[in-house]
Image (cartoon, rainbow, N blue to C red; front, top):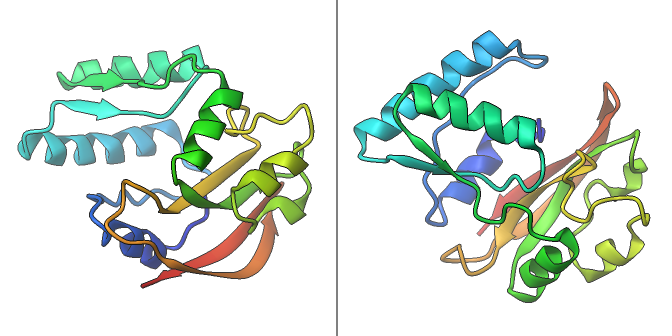
Length: 176
């Protein structure tokens, strides 16, 4: 959904984060998505993982879907920022050192020029009043490249912004 190249994800993971790639086609039916996720979850369970953390904040239907599917394979879900006011959460993230770039926006909610911009105070200041700063209504997706969760920060290169099926995707590369 984010439109991030696999090479960029692997670069991000090289900074100390585990990565399991699940290949799914564009416009993926739920059956194919769920089969890919079951395979990934089976690998995680084999490695001793029993709980999966999600960053979803408000969408009860998504939470219920994730919890029920994980329960089928005897795993738990954690939604640590659940119901947190996004205005407070975004301030905590940005002032806490999160460095991110917006890689995807929904044209129905934001103009294409928001794609490829750094997710910082200036970006947030320019968001329309009806846009959720954390993208909880699908307005945006961001890629983290620096902050306390990484062992190093990346140099970011922003390439072309491409529009496809109502979304604008920024081609982003990460380098050390």
